[in-house]
Length: 121
Image 1: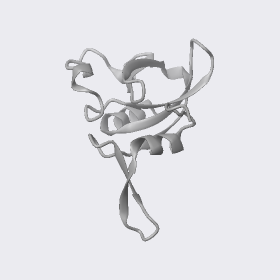
Image 2: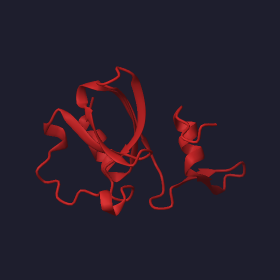
Image 3: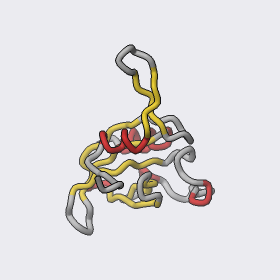
Image 4: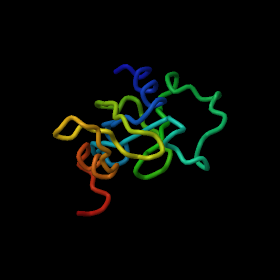
């Protein structure tokens, strides 16, 4: 697993991270980021020079849905994929039937990408 690549992609946007929870032992898929574009200003870490993402056992990243920082044991990461969103508007650009770019609601895109459904339907 190329952890440097994961960190690089998280610094630029959102990554769908699949990992095994150390607490429950269950597989989880979470949308995580390190980009200030997706972290509320009040929750941003201003001085992170003391922490090295690639030289520690834990990957510290921001969970988009639960809006909190989380630490993921690097050995539990199963897979990952980059997800591209437009910062601040939280919409996703997709082509419609005619090839035109339309904006798709963030929650709908999240529902399609993960099996999580925060609205309960």
